Image 1: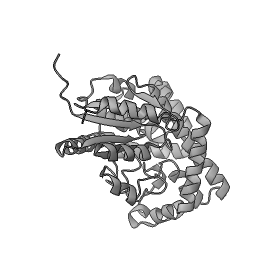
Image 2 (image 1 turned 120 degrees about the horizontal axis):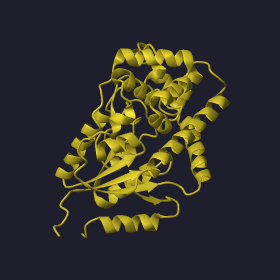
Image 3 (image 1 turned 30 degrees about the vertical axis):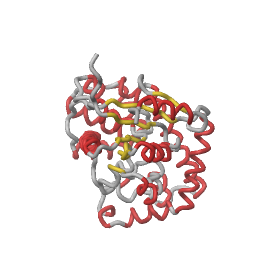
Image 4 (image 1 turned 135 degrees about the horizontal axis):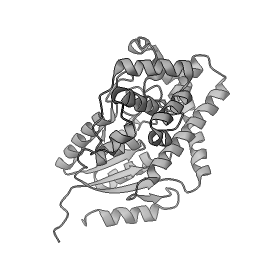
Length: 318
């Protein structure tokens, strides 16, 4: 049987606050790797503290890719991410280094590893119209509308996930065909790499919830609200008619901070809403991860020996 000559890559996946960044850095230093961020918030400049972007010191420990590639008022699609990520992966391999994909955005992982089905391009007018309807009726009402025209998509998309609700309704209204049907059609080419997929997830959900709360409190101490104040004050951001509809501002924590700075609720209420939203994000991430059949799961607190063994079996003998 011929040897598998595909280049190697490591994918480190998991819910938010599960320790992916620290582990990815450890692996990069161990194997001579470069990290490709797979995170839909980290692509935006200025989303640093609240998005847990690797610090300057952490970025100095290993080269990082796909951080700060857009301003927060600019669009960035999963298809663009896949193209940029594959280019970064090819460059890492050409330099004789090990690519390490690390993050928690399932759609981005799907886009780069498996390819995406061809989809109609975004329609700015229709998207704006859906946003206006959401302001008037609420995203739950639009999710109920989606359930009538595309039950499969509505079952996957949470009623508190406006970005995906908007996109699913946009595709249906543009084409008359549900987005779930589009997604079942032929995808682009799979990534021509041999990938070790590792999921970091605490076995006890309460542990993850505690980590989320501790990390958010640390973000507040580091100046998260000042970071959001700075974003709000940027001239280009002030020109946006509906900033809360921007994907960057809808990132978990940022939306709640933006609303708080708009005068909604107390500081304590803001904290509780942000932590609750982060826990819901983690739940959605875990649901997506359970749908994969070829990833290995590890508790980062107790399974380090098993993680090291999995890496050792995957990596070529030195």
